[in-house]
Length: 190
Length: 152
Image (tube, rainbow over the protein chains, first blue to last red):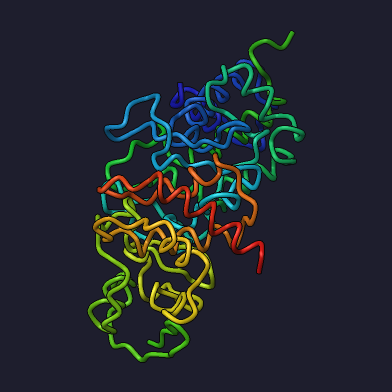
């Protein structure tokens, strides 16, 4: 599906290209959903309970984060144990299996309204196109966020044998721009 | 590089990627922080950096930004920290290996959250393992320390 969406985008010179069709937009969304529903994303995109997941390595699909971690309303564990107690805010090769991953940013959970864990494709589609539930982003801002976020970059290169979402970050941005150009369609739209 | 530990500034000649725990124990002879697992799974190496609990086995020396406090700098025998007092009052330690990390974790936690719920105490302390199973006394001591700190 990814190849299909990207090929559609690349097949025609941009200047001569009409807005992508709804079908093309939906194909691009499928590529986006393949990433946003992947455990590398949903392990932290959890709901208001603030309990991160450890789906990956040998832990199993339903494994919650060890150490009884509660990120709390602060989403950084300020009420209990800060994320940064273990996830140091510094660039790292993240080469040691089972050691906490680190990036050059403050480790944290996304806001609760950005919960993706367990969401269907259609629910997540509606959520991501709405600034009320996508952290206030217009689509071009969301693309910039993908390109500049240390978290997103780490998600595609998490190290130490951790699973990675399908495709590359560049392909994700292409799919997002295509979906946006098509009017952010969702499958259940009339 | 320069590291400030327990109020004293040290000049240390180490690689940037040496874990702070190694620097403390092997270079500076500060052996309160313990090596347990080396991957932030046990909490025995916990120290404070500017008051925040940090697993010193994970923090590279070159990434230390702020003042480091170890159990040696938390209190003194004549002026114990409230958490240390509570630990003695309730005779928490059994073998004691994990206790420096437990106390540092608890002290940082109570500094951020002076009126914790039982659930928050459990969550805050669950990253610090105790192979002797002194958890019930740890929980009681954190509660006692919270009361002591609120009286200050």
